[in-house]
Length: 604
Ligand code: GTP
View 1 (cartoon, rainbow, N blue to C red):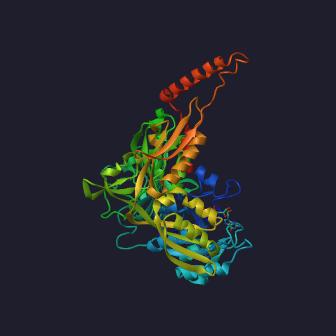
View 2: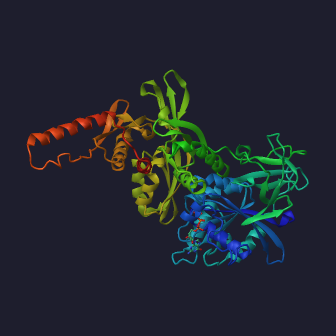
View 3: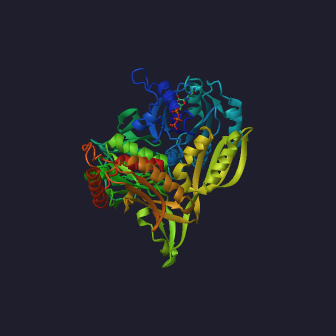
């Protein structure tokens, strides 16, 4: 396809505003999806995406479209996730495009992720097509939402398209608008069809038979089957085994030309060789400069990941490597715990990312894991070297308080959009969570945007759930990390039967330590089965016990058999039982079932 008939674009929106449904309609209109292969949210291919109805991975699909002017176009659509934890996926997708369809729900209006994604598209200098979706719903208010778009983004109200992805209203017009308003791939001094190959690797996944499959956007030159290629910063040469477009299924081609987007198979089996954001170029004739690539993403939430069965450590390792290929924001390194054996310390972009990670491991790799309590990364200055900070995200590595000069925790700048009726509730919640309000701005007569600064650790715990419950689900949240601020932090150990269970320790702000410990012990009490002896559950900061619970003993009725008879005989039996129990308490090992860890994690 000649490059001026190619349109590369993304669909961006807040979660659930209808991106995947719009993609479905575009797939149908261009004939890629028909009655035979029809399914809803066709681009959400991961089991977890279909189960939960959310997109967590960007997806690529190439569509052939004959416009009303009779010309054929190649439309490369990249569907993107809407949740804040996956915004990294959005940035990566946008870097491969010239345009973005910005979707806003006609019943809800602009939400936090709409704003965040709009600015990402603007940074990439993309042409933005604003679309108000779900106009079929009785509660749709197109004039209000269009006005919000104009006010917040400075886009022209006349350019806002009103559509319904569900009933198909406005989809033909949208296709025409894509073709006529989104620019073709740009030719400039650095990038053109005549220059050496320069392809951006924007995604990859693993195929058991073919090895690593990489998704590329060709920014310069072209790539053909049989070509010798290499990654810009490496020397090793690979031969292109197969390439083509992704049209729901792979559609093999012999060449990917300038401006096109598609898959490439190089026969790579070692996963670590492929890096997202890298530039693929010709080996005999490499390009002079690599593409800009992506900023290294920094995880914000950390947790220990252990195989349920300690023998499965190697399986877990290989699953993590494969998952990393498809989720480049995942970070992990080896660690061990006396309670759980060998495992990994993993870094995630947020709590939802962590949950999705756990479910993907289980669904796609059949790997069950135990996750320890999530933590953020603290900055700690020690007495012996107060100039230099160390970063700690693992309770196991937390220093003794006596050795600490000062401690700091990460703060975020958060942005909540909500109906103003809930403003009081949200402000109270923000205050409870140690947040500070910075700004308040009315988007329309009854919807406000609230800016505040708050410790990240508070968001990691139960902020989302609480926000949802105090606003009946009507608030949306977006945030970014801003700096580190001084904080009083402690490590809380959980002792079961006087023994510290390292996998249950957590780091907490001092003022929250007791409250959180109580919740944890309460939950553990429900989860650990009764033993023949009483079990003490304690939470301690250093040697100070700050909370305590007891699981009472299972009392076996040793006197059941002696009906009637002498009281002294009964007493003797009870004495004997007491003696036995003492032994069990001191020698017996308390079994903590896996479920206790899982519930513990959820609750805490
Ligand atoms: P994430 O992938 O989770 O970010 O969501 P999304 O933006 O892809 O939204 P999705 O397409 O999954 O739609 C969310 C819900 O809105 C689904 O239940 C859709 O059926 C519904 N929906 C989407 N478009 C329309 C529409 O035009 N009208 C109505 N009534 N419902 C719609």
